[in-house]
Length: 102
Image 1 (cartoon, helix red, strand yellow):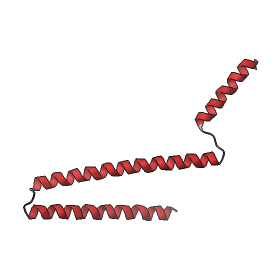
Image 2 (image 1 turned 180 degrees about the vertical axis):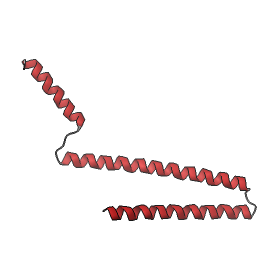
Image 3 (image 1 turned 135 degrees about the vertical axis):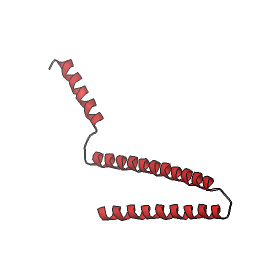
Image 4 (image 1 turned 90 degrees about the vertical axis):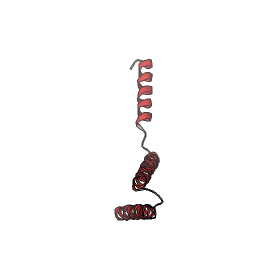
């Protein structure tokens, strides 16, 4: 499984680098043709990089939340209780013991 994850990561990284290189080539071609200035090109590239970074961070957060939910589901299937449920039960037992004078 670790090898599969590593290959998937490398595939995604390769695609990202390839896309970045194609985008930079397109922008450089536009500068050569005089369609945009070098400073505009730099600004466009920086804006695009920021957008890609934001999208990557958003996707990372989404995947982390999905993995957390799957992990919690698996723990529930195995019969584990959450800390919150445990603390509720502990408080209930304490309350009942106090009511009965234990």
